[in-house]
Amino acid sequence: MGCTKMVSQEFTAITRSTDAALNQAGDAAWITRVSQTAQANAALSVADLGPLQGLSFAVKDNMDVLGLTTTAGCPAFAYAAFENAQVVQSLLHAGAVLQGKTNLDQFACGLNGTRSPYGAVPNAFDAAYVSGGSSSGSVYVVATGQVDFALGTDTAGSGRVPAGLNNIVGLKPSRGLISARGVVPAAQNVDCVSIFARTVSVAAQVLGACMGYDDADPFSCRVAMASQPLPLSFRFGVPNALNFFGDALAEAAFAQSIQNLTRLGGQAVTIDYAPLSQAANMLYESALVSQRYAAIQTFFDAHETEVVEPVRSIIAKGRQYSAADYIRAEIELKRLEKQAERMWQHIDVLLVPTAPTHYTMAQMQADPVVLNRNLGQYTNFVNLFDYAALSVPSQIRPDGLPFGITLIGRAGSDWQLAELGQRYHHATDLLQGATDVPLPAPQAIAGLTAPDTVRVAVVGAHLSGMPLNVQLTERGARLIGPAHTEPDYRFFALPNAQPPKPGLLRVQAGQGAPIALEIWEMPLAHFGSFVALIPSPLGIGTLQLADGSTVQGFLCEPQALIGATDITDFGGWRAYIASLTSAVA
Image (cartoon, rainbow, N blue to C red; front, side, top):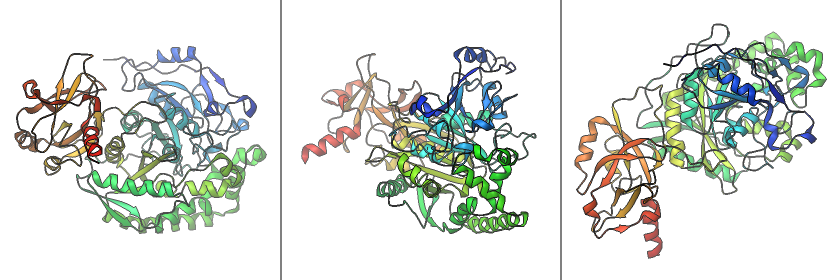
């Protein structure tokens, strides 16, 4: 067993200037970088064999790190942290290595990433566009592969909007699941620490390492976590009123996401979006905005001119409300929450676009309040109603910009959302973030206790949409996602097979290629009857996957390949079938 040592190392750092002339656009993501010497020293102070060993991370600069300055994006507010935020401490104990602190919309007030004296953070796919915020820097360094994961905060969508705009995962946990002690508040009773990663499995692993009750955090909760996956056939809500602000590409992408989720076993159910939309508007258009003012009242009253616009005007607006105004707003919010509660009688999860559109830097700076509000069209209500949410990539649009969807569930549904979100993400076969790295094989979500199941890899006629796929679905199997074999297999089209079937054969190292496949999970009780349907010369054996893991899957006896056509160069059955179709056309 590893020996866990006390994390007491103070970090030393290099802090960026607020002079825009000194900061390149890509560098705007960081406010403070931890020196290599400090990283080496700190690595001696973490768990030798922690669950996050070897993973690097960054934290949004509204979280305390011992020995570093916390700015919240405001130089006049900056102070030296005398201890780690509880969530940072947990991650260091779990073996993760801190790389530095990231830029943000000042005081976490914004959803666009341009409201910082340390510079505007660009979109990882096109620097002319906003990254989304307020956790802009954390998203950028994850999307570009600079760290394995990063922490953000989420009050109105800051842990989701930038994830959706940059093709990464944004995990917004149930309120109080992760301690916010040592985090500069924005609206303390609804603030959440959020997690960014390029895959759901990493985000879920990080959640498992840092979640937990903290009696020193007044809003920490003992959340009752659902431990079973959503049903194989589940119902997902779709808002009856959708607004993409004229973005036809986003509208088409969301329509496709409904089809994608249906293919995973979902049934779309239209829900009344009015109470959710009305609650979202209350966050900034009612006395609830006074929470923003209360969070930094002492500093703000003394240094109001040090706060950038439009953050200054938004926070100052909180002064105008009375205690009676605030109570009336809370009552109205409860009324809307009761109305929204009705939808859960008909759905298991809610599907929404993570963000309705993309905006350029120039557009955002020309109309910063209205366009920022537009980005929160589908996010602002989530924490107000104490829901959990997970943003996952859905597609790269024809214009080259990412589109993401968000799965929303009741408090405690975090693991369920992770399981479904991972299946959805991996079915897209997208690359990770803005890198050229493919998605790895999906991983089990540790927080779920699934019924006895077995995973099986299919390479041909059992693929989704292919003639024999029904043999999987009628046994209650669910698609986990696409993957590839390691490059030691050759692939053949078998002669005289009806319906057409391939044969997969393992060969010596260097003589094969990666072959595309799908991983399905089915109840163990039905596995025997499935295997009984497999005709010779095919059978089930152990496949080696590209990420080094193994899975049970289809293999072929070598003698059956006499007269077979070698189709290895196609890389998979779908590409081969498509070539036959195009040849006929």
